[in-house]
Amino acid sequence: MATEQAKPIGKPDYAPPPIEGDFYRIAAVLTDSERALLKRVREFTEGVIAPVIEDYWSRDAFPFEIIPKMAEVGIGGVGYQGYGAAGGSWLLNGLVAMELARVDASVATFWGVHTGLSAGSIYLCGDEEQKQRWLPPMMRFDKIGSFGLTEPLVGSATSGGMMTTCRREGDNWILNGQKKWIGNATFADINVVWAREEGSNQVKGFVVGKDNPGFSVEKIKTKMALRVVQNGLITLSDCRVPEADRLQNANSFKDTAKVLRMTRTGVAWFAVGCQMGAYERKANRWIPARSGPARQDARQRHIDPGDDAASRAATGRRRDAR
Image (cartoon, rainbow, N blue to C red):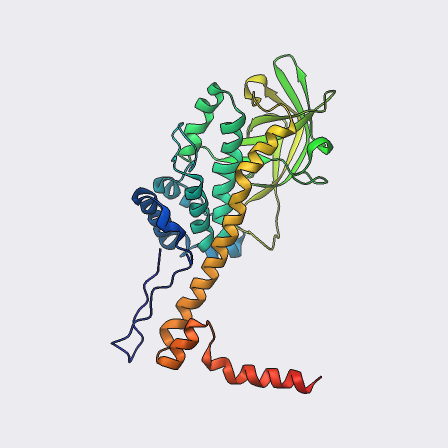
């Protein structure tokens, strides 16, 4: 997935090698169709995301117009089988996460929460009827999901300390509590919420619609990081959820942990993508302006020769100060 460089002015016979952040050529082990998907992802991030994302970041807003375009790329449910999912390997899933984060970590997080944590909860913990009902529209990005686990006083490793509770009343469940820092929650159609059952203290999972009585969301403002992600504080006040919307195979925190295990590697891939983007952005701005053997050698060592004198002077000052 290299980025070609323009020839530097004054040196028509020289063009630097392509900028390539995939140092170990991991993409080379993919099939042709998988590499084609990654190419579509890069065209999407560079052609659709990059031109607008700084404006949305400054306004603490989300670019909703990108959702249909993301759906066209075909990255709903990479790694899942069936239900309209993109399929493929988990390596491909990681490389898609990396490509998204290479340009913007917020957009990568939106995708990861929607197709990973939220849809993944249904994929792993729903029964067949629930998977057929919810997953196809999520894979098409017609319905957007969130994942409500973290609470104001308890992190994602909540287990027995979860404060959000649920109790059954006939064919319904009554949920009470709060979930905080929930990505996509301000606009999600499908909110996966985890709650501890009164009495048994076992954790159960529920799909809560944004229009469920007793469900409300407040946007968390003035964030410093991932500003494009719309994080919300979910409040559940005697929120009534039908038994049919309880994830039928989520009956303890061990089931919650299955979802976390499946998706946590994606966060590491996000970090790789951020590093790749930083490296390639710097190299793209710096290399085309350099030429000649000495400067070419400096380029290979990732050192700016124009900074050498200043660097030596600064080092000398530090030594004199000892």
